[in-house]
Length: 289
Image 1 (cartoon, one colour):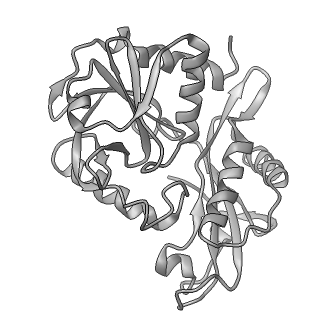
Image 2 (cartoon, one colour):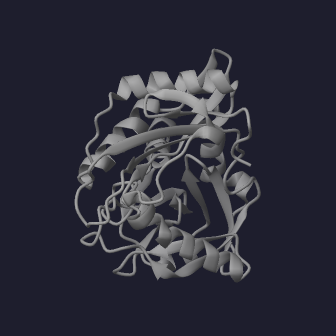
């Protein structure tokens, strides 16, 4: 699904076949989830293949490493260049890109002895699909911000996301919404949440969420489009009584929500602010007017 015998990856300064790329079963990242990653998209535009907000993503990769004491010995601009080269080698135009910084063998709970980087890519549609989603509120909450670095994209953090999504799908839903440790709306397992009420858009404030790059793009689009929006702490009933809602993230892009606990949102998706932003976002990444 993600690679074949011809796929090339970038591994520790070299391009090589994915089928030949190896790592140790004793890596600290394998045993403890002590590593960081990014999710990035490239799009085929009229001006050629363009990586959307490449600098912001690699800067966040650097921030994530620094937040959890993993040395980051790579230049952001060089990583961007290597990523464009990787796309060209694989002849990818519309693609998802996954850089991961991982740690060498170390069975102690200490900073890594050595750090490696791998960048891979594959052609991938919208992560949550194109249809409107039926969501539930998960029984799992987001980790407490004093227990982890919530603004870092750390490998081990996503066990929480896997549990929430698996629970949702096992009970007949497409995806979950997680509350934070205080009971306020937080985010999806791999995406940020927005909801609309009376022509105003709302989204949870930072502090208990991963402040997504797509989330920041949506906020910027709202300002440019004259859409009023507010950031704050919102309880579950705010979402239950919303007119419409959507999730956003690099992998998911912008995807509308049909219902929460099988209760459909009253506003048609086609008439919502989310739909307008979905169109604007697609035009932005494709560099259309």
